[in-house]
Image: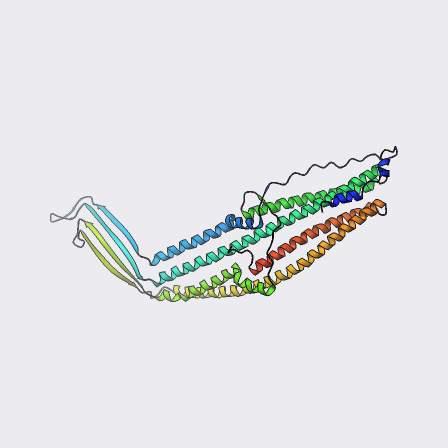
Length: 445
């Protein structure tokens, strides 16, 4: 594409007779070429491969870091819940200072200085409610891990789409710059023809207007590329913009295989299944709310000075039985709440399975149509390029005006941009099909 302008320049080469007329006394006055400043270079960007961009995003992206922290938080809550049915050992010490000794018939019954210390060991022997709370907290760890996997999947998809967008914008910029080169060659040729007395000023102005249009498209394309690189850098989690190169995507599976794989490989489906399992498990533990609790407590102590009821040293032990009789309806409300959560989780799973099957079918159809669309767009671009070459030949021969030439330039430019867009549509469609089937991203790698 970049050589088209040079080819056009060769096709539109000024004939020797025209060059000779530039020195004629009756030649048109020379027209200065438009002075355009050299475009500022694109901001620096870190070049990353497709796989490396995905890998870094799973380590640096904010959502990935938060998801990892949520897993650790769930593990901490599970340890807190487990502490409810594990033994507890506490030490206590008390020092009491009275204003003076308490006397009774000349005897000290309460000295001014008193010190007491003990160790209290509490052991839950039967604690079904604590066991249930700990089991439910363990289920939440599994849920957070499934949620983390789904967050990583969403991050990888967002990075992949942003990566492909950068590739597409680079392609559009390449096509736009090629069109600008062609327009520059046309303008230069029109200017020289006018100066040689073979053309008119209208042709020059039209060619210059088309050149200005192409330069504007180039600048817009450069701006879009810069924004796409910056967006990719934010998703990857790097301090700079990220540049992309043409990726190599895996071959999508056939439709029946894609539907089957989606139900077993997609992390969002696994998350919905784990939610249903956790809700059912939590509901199955409702019986623990009606069970008694039995705890044992042992306490060695030190009392100085000793009293009538507490010697200097000693120990005591207790068994404490608690039978829940009435709690104002708390247990029944919790039972109904867990039943509703199970119903919601089951409905979400059924709806999710229907949705992923629909996504697979839609992605498969979109990919097929994107392939056909790309073939059509590429054919249109080839025909438009050929029409531009023919228009150049006709214009040089004087068979057409530069209106046809400019129209051919615009059609060729637009067709080439549409072909670049169609390439991106196909890449995105294949990515969507891989994602819908669960083959992308492969988080097991």
